[in-house]
Image (cartoon, rainbow, N blue to C red; front, side, top):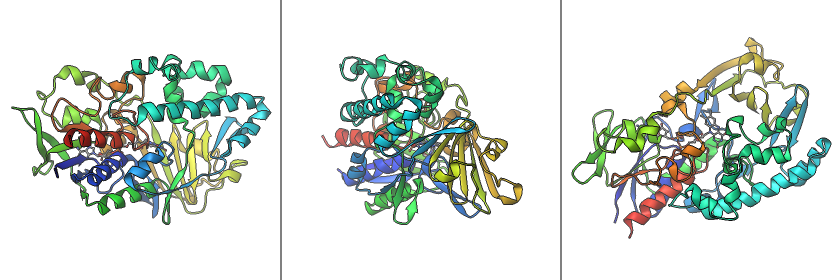
Length: 439
Ligand SMILES: Cc1cc2nc3c(=O)[nH]c(=O)nc-3n(C[C@H](O)[C@H](O)[C@H](O)COP(=O)(O)OP(=O)(O)OC[C@H]3O[C@@H](n4cnc5c(N)ncnc54)[C@H](O)[C@@H]3O)c2cc1C
């Protein structure tokens, strides 16, 4: 066999896919426009401190993916995992231990409701994982409707489910408000029983640890990486609609038998392919995505002296803070905040925010995401995580990880089951290639 696969993108999905393909006898070369691996889960340096570029916590990688890649990372759980701001002076803590969580909700007289929530999320997540997530054939919405145990995940909306259990002011604790009208599936996706943690690999803690572990594993398996290498075009033999290789920004051509793109599907199908290769009717709705629908901003600040937090946050420095300005994490001299943060807003939680204490600051917007990672519209999950782009319609209805071009596959966050650090699209797309080429 020994077919050559060109993987576009070294985000975590590209890394997972490369390892699985290399372990199954494929010759793998990864082409990455940036100078380092990890994509939106990568890290960079600011004020001499290693900082996450995008993602900072992990929670959605199923253990089976660690086993299949042979990657072993520790999991560091802050406790409480998260601290959620209810109003100006009151907070609720989401402890690591479910029984402590239930106790915490006693003060709101919601202990029985939170138990139902924890049990439901675990049960539904396990149904999804065992039947629908780890598959080379993404399920249609009807597949879930026809499954008596999974039906509720598409029949009920997030809002309908949450309003049975909690007052509305608590809903953002579990999911962003933009998802309230989406199927219950989305709530389960973001609230897995294994919860959110920081990966640990050797002396590294944080998302960078996961990327280092995956990258090093890929190298062990002989995967070749070319960084600062932007793919400009996917080359297709138009007579038999089969891939031939890619053309780089530099004009150089690299030949390959198979191409797995983990770049945004909008980018892959519209920018990298010649326009007459795929019938436009398939990709039209990708081209029509509203720009910057998620106007996310991320502020990263490196302090000279450790930031001091207001009470009671100071007691839980390691937790994920869900504040009215957005999410915030604090690590030693580093603060990262995502949502709609601004400097004045952060100063309400950090008492020594004075300019003399700020060593370096970086602001990342959706427009930056678009230019850095080539994600059209700045979507941090490549495509919206909404019903229209979910299930077997992510990215194009009925395609799964394949495309009409023989040898061209899609396996990043814009493929089923979607974004965040899960490794699942990378894993599933790799197995799709393995099943197609080892028959
Ligand atoms: C600010 C922010 C915070 C986030 N927080 C979290 C979090 O805490 N937890 C979580 O789970 N998720 C989080 N996410 C989402 C998560 O980071 C992404 O959904 C996930 O990393 C996507 O991984 P991927 O491998 O599919 O794609 P990417 O990470 O986007 O990787 C694709 C790669 O392809 C490369 N590429 C694109 N086009 C080309 C080309 N033409 N040639 C060569 N290379 C190309 C890109 O440079 C990139 O490296 C966050 C995202 C952002 C932006």
